[in-house]
Amino acid sequence: MSGGHPPRPHRAGIRLLAYLLVCWAANAVVLAIVCWIFDDIQAGTNAQLLTAAAVFGVLNTIVKPILRLFTFPLAVFTLGLAWFAVSMLMLWLTSVLVSGFDVNGFWTYVWATIVIWLLNVAVDLVMWRGRAAAAGAGQSVALSG
Image (cartoon, rainbow, N blue to C red; front, top):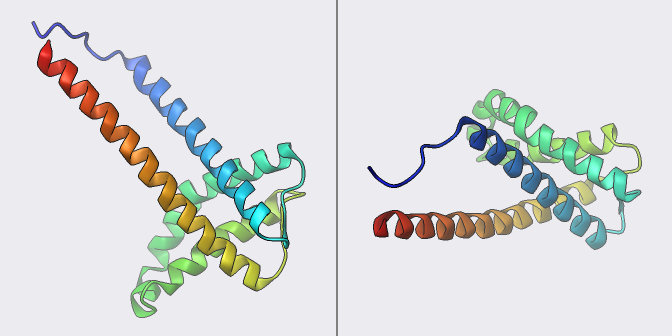
């Protein structure tokens, strides 16, 4: 026997829920930072910012991949610029769908999309290091047992 317990089905659901909550919190922090940086972006209340983070996350998880698939030929032709426009569209849709979360001006969308991308790269790096450290800790426990 390996000494470990077999994975329980409900653990996967808990991990998914935890992942979604972390992503939602990360989106909220990223959007709050973008609102702080740009005078032309208003977050509204804390509840509106949290709603915007949830909407932005859902759009990026469901709508964005579909649009990226449909715009793939255009993205090849424009060397990826079409996908930047898709990212801007996700921010615009968030501002349309969430009252109180407002982005004013084309160039604000452009620069906010760039900042969101940079912040998401930073968040992904931090989360990747955290997962790698947890996996490393898990391996050392498994090897010693």
